[in-house]
Length: 477
Ligand code: DAH
Image 1 (cartoon, rainbow, N blue to C red):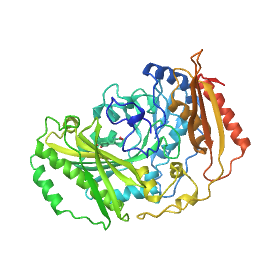
Image 2: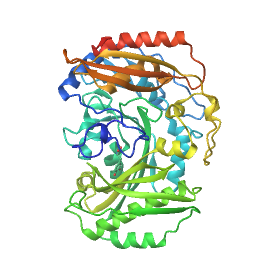
Image 3: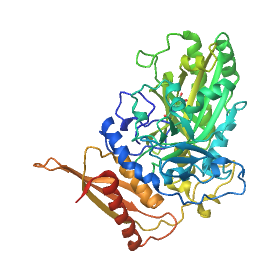
Image 4: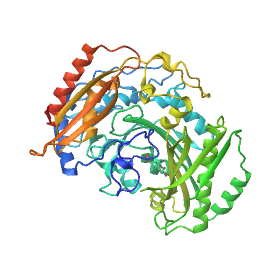
């Protein structure tokens, strides 16, 4: 998955996409585009924004009609209107109509949608927590990055990885963007929302997914006693057995914050891990011997930090990132006398596993055959409807310095939408004399609900070839 923006800034962008994202099944390419090159590329992408926005969002009867996120977004050459608000565009602007249409969907608010079902199940394990799930996805760069101690050069800020409405306004890349705001209001909070990251295309990657953020704060003075009592009293309600391995240690690489009292920090960390162990135990109560492990991690906004992984079908799957909240953030929230933990988890990742959903695009399906399979409050295995044949097309070109795979995938999404199942780089070489780089991508077109004809795909592929030349200035081969 592309830049899991949220680990240490020193890692390569591609290796960074983290715990709270949708599942990472394979690592594709390394991201080598320089910052200045990205800025140039961004300008070449801007003309797409003049496209008018046609898609009519699907309405569900249970929706609150007054929800401004349900209003159709509008893009003009100068402005973007989304969620009933208008933002002037500038050279950072890179949101597209395809992406803005997703902001109207609000899957986590559709009661029988698997994302909402998982959301409710997890939230029921955190009684007494105030749950915010209607925050609009447009946030400031201050909320998404600065308030959370991201460095100025953190790769997560790159225009290749993040959707910008303009220099200071963006689609949130994680629910942590609301941490500061909600922590001023309560000491026990959950935030569920749609989050947006520019990304590659395959069965487990999608540029929009859903996260749940949780945080709990304690009075520093009484934290140790309160936490020890609470852990001692809590019992597991679930019947399944969970085997948890935790060999993590507090080290200089994953340190205690200087300002923290060691006992209070250790108690907070124990409470965090205990709460999350209970949460997975509840979600996976049907699994006989669930293996869970804790590993060290790094996030700009927590220290120490960890990730939880679960062993699923022979592979360790990252489920969430978490840690002890940076005291600066609590101080800025007006809570200097508190110590606290926070976590962020990816809901698609859990839903794919628990419901056995084979392709992440299905969550966005408007096909009744998908939605009618699920009931609020229960996890039942998805019964696939027929798989339609694929239509495969290759596109080869001489690349250039500004080329970035996420920009290429964005054009593919704009042209063909969810009909594209997978995009893979199948060949790459540098010409020995001219030093020009040749790339060949294979596009796998497959609809989830109907047969596609070769003729209709040819039209899309031709359009893609034109757009790639226009917008990326590459030379087709
Ligand atoms: N925001 C992180 C991400 O999207 C996940 C995360 C990690 C959230 C640690 C947290 C946290 O609240 O403490 O990758």
